[in-house]
Length: 286
Image 1 (cartoon, rainbow, N blue to C red):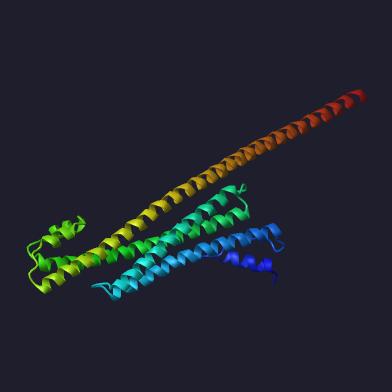
Image 2: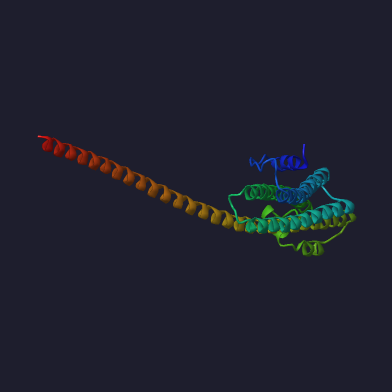
């Protein structure tokens, strides 16, 4: 099998399905180069998406195995994983933007090249959005778990506080004021307050990470809106072309009908002439 065939088969199997576009066995060097460029771009974006998914899975495992408290080492690992996710996300966003710009440069929107690239772009964009949604959902679950644990700890040293007061205290991000003002009389109480402060720091980090992921969602939403504008423009031009075709078809049908009517009249005229000539000949013969 030739290299061109191999690359065509690879391209058709990219992502979640096959692209039903045939470029032919004898693809030109330029077509082969375009295919290789698309494959390389898609592979790089897919690798970064997989980094995000992997980081989410590892973070989930750490949080679930240490639901009560994270050691400093595990917290550093969580921070490193999220930093990796953020870096990969910005890379993907940049790569998708470059992909979108390449789509804009393709003049023939009905060409196989455009359809292949658009299919891959939309698939990658959807997978990226899904990976971010998984990361966001994971962070939100662990944030709520951490918040519930922290509320239970606060309840131990501040028994008269109800859930609404504890929630307001956590949301205010001023837990240090509460711990500093609380009368510490025993070693156990000091340990409890220290644990509360550490858990609150964990909660704040998770919330910060969650805010960053939501910010990435806003960026992706903007990218989706821009791509939708491109789709709308393509659909508009396609619709206009369809209108022109329909108008041309209608005009052609009208011309054919007129021609048929003219041919029919011409036939009757010729018959009338023949009959008239026959009558004249008969009269002359008499």
